[in-house]
Length: 359
Image (cartoon, rainbow, N blue to C red; front, side, top):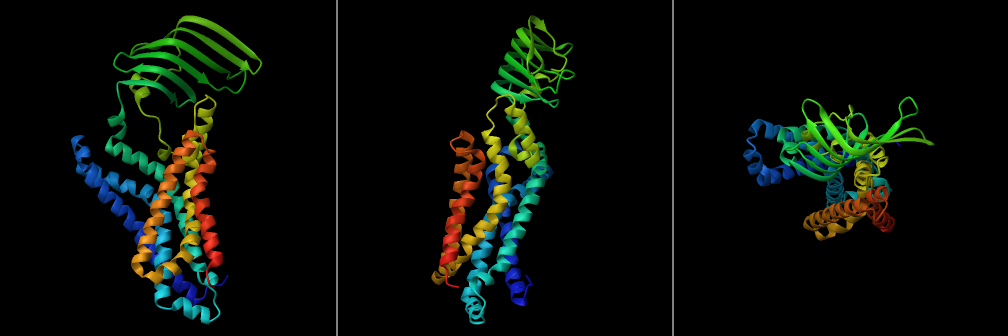
């Protein structure tokens, strides 16, 4: 479709407001977080320069989360401006329908979707750097931990009933490795407890070792004491929090989910978070379809009403996102479906409003 001068004008107006909102919202979030968390960071004796860099690394994730809200504000305020200045009325008088008039805004929403996908790709590395600068993992680590799963770098999965880093002791240990065949067989190891020394590493006690070279063959051996040379992680390493979903991109999170599923771990939380990496950018287009017809009505009550409706819609959308994260994590709804429900809800209402708007 060939862009007319009017299309370029509409797109330019939308893009200006969108850019301001995309930058302004993260700045506001950062200012609020500084007010709330600065004292905590200073108690950790973090250098001020590291704190400033950490907030810089937080920008991609914040921008990613506020993209739908930025699109909504840009849509409502740009169309509101066109309505107040009778530009939409003039376009209709020239034979340009409302649906055709907002095509450049739809194009802007598509651009924001592409931006969202790009941000989703760089956010994990930025979050990881931010966590290191703020020493978040050090702050969360403890000497004791119970009922957790740890995934090693060589695709082994440890399920541990209890861990004491000070004593170098584990209780109720299960170790699983997924193999590829007789040359690299699968195995499962169960031990009542384990003890660690720097010289010898981990010594597993009172357990059973099950070797599975093929799907139909299992060799089992009971042991009183065993050293697994693959179990190299020191107690402090096991106490560290596992990688959070926000520190993995879409593909890395998918590989992590498959690895955890093979060990019988509940991965609903990770499945929901993974699908949100696609659902949030796609919602930018959906929220535009909702905001465009709403803006024509809102501006009859003045700019204040437009601001109120935009803020209310943003709050409702963010509440839906948080609600669906919790529902998907609990498995009440299919995790992948839960991630798309906020967009589906706004998509239905947006389609109805768009069909009913006077063109």
